[in-house]
Length: 313
Length: 288
Image (cartoon, rainbow over all chains, first blue to last red; front, side, top):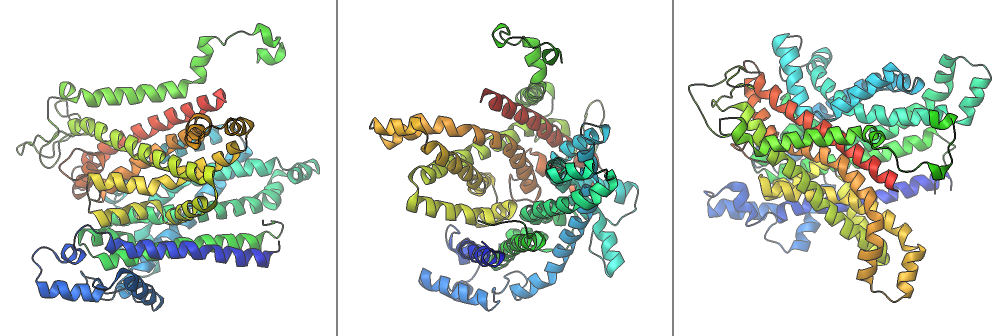
């Protein structure tokens, strides 16, 4: 099968999952036990306000019509009105999205910068002290909950030694970077075990591949070997691992944003649950689902573009 | 080493000496011992520490760790060491049940999909695809949003978000075993579907699910504490590690022990479970 057919099939594969996500998000309000309007507005709401909300959410229509309305609204970028902010859900999400995207992006960058050299070092010298240390640290951080790690970093580097701010997002590039450093380090430390383990394993596999053996017999220096033959393949592996874990990263951002009081989507979904702001919860769940699907798709496409040898079935 | 140098005929080897086994399963034994100590400590918490997990003492708030209060006290004067001990029961039970329920559900649905194939397979696997497209934590949070925060919601949410991986594993295994000779023989003998599924297929596909469950339980306990930290899981004033850390968040400027010490319990349990899980996985693989 050629690349183009693969691409077309891969994009088509996304459609049922996309439909599933829209259906699940649609169900969020409909599955609330009891009267959703009453739950959202509280027990003291007047009959008039309840009736208005039911009309607004289309809850008085037959269920299949509700779904039709929901889907057509999504296609128009219309996610309803937030009950808490009394503004368009889409607008609020668009304000908050950059914070989450910047946090995840910065964390991914930091993770790659830290993990790739460590994984290369561990894979090149299996069983050496550096391999042992890397493995011990990654086993340890694997058992650490991100929120606890984040709070301890705050205590150490924002309270005891005030290098970094305690909370907030900041303004301007450097200020934002300064505010996001501790959150990004926290995410990096949680992501590192997964990234390093998988990368180390795939690098070891690459190092034993015939073409690397041949290059070594040819007398290439180890450094040259790594640059020319190992890193290129290793980076592809990193890309795949990151793509697979992007959903996990999004989930992590929910917790980390709450710890560091960052005004992103993750913190927003948590506060929206407390406020019973269902249109907002639906909107954010939909955006998270879409982001994960898109990034997984992009990873696959990038992989196809980078590695012409890969054959697809 | 000596084995390689002096090959001994296989017949003369006999059973492995027990000391050898001990060392090979040191991870399993260490992990199990730590877990046993923590469980016993939690069960007998009333004898170990004189303070109740919910017992307030407003004249004794925010005390630094000392001999009377090894982990200090919180903003209500509750003894943190007692609360950490009592919490182990709850967190370990949630961890166990929230792996057990998805495991059962996943085996049932994955088994049906793999065994019967056809339309059942298509429907079940499309549901699996949708469930695994959502990030785990976002899925759990979404379900909790529907049901409202609380312990029951936590069980339901972690079950619904966790089963799909087990279904995938079981289906893949069943697809292989279904074609094996002993299953064909059982079918030729005219055994019913239920008998073949439970007596012939299930025992042969369960090992990989247990190996996965062993790593899953660490993730589930970390998720439980995270959700409670966010206010979406176990509710205060219950003694639970995530809640305790969340209560400590407001006091990081003055009382570091409220955050740091309960978390160490999570790390120790996580490490012990990892050691135990790796050990069990190794043991299961060696059994074949």
